[in-house]
Length: 213
Image (cartoon, rainbow, N blue to C red):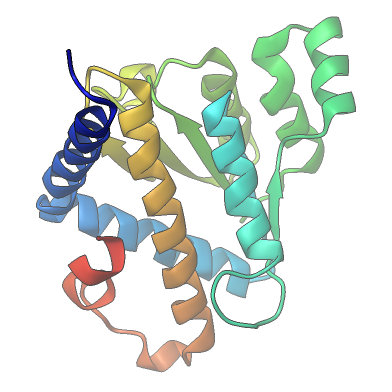
């Protein structure tokens, strides 16, 4: 019988392996950089980032938004991040229209051209996130997606997709999503603090293994 400590070690090793696989792919680092640049440009232009997801991804969406409106590591002005998490909105739209419309209706009401949607779905098949993307496109918003597996129905539908190609457990995907969210905030803060004309970094300069290890 496996001891509890050996189980702990096995889980940590699995997480470490998944992280190594993700960070060793230069395309993933480039995607994270591209997403951060897109978001920083929107914020610099007076726009906002709207985030959404279900279950654990819903918590990730809120985490991302509060790191913007609050802070990450250093004091700085609040940034415009908004998670679709108001319980009265979710219950109203879910009851009157169906749960697949809870995010898209919010975007129809509050999304504006120049805003960014951050949609999070470990499977890539969440019907309400798919509809959120459709609504964002109607509003001429940019779209960043955090997905997993093979990207599901959301594959190819974003301006930037950051995909964790893990096919066994959603929690392994969510662990990487959580780290990516922290890195996005770090990069956004870095980009927002720098004069525009000085920002000319490569992905390997912005995203170091020491940051995401």
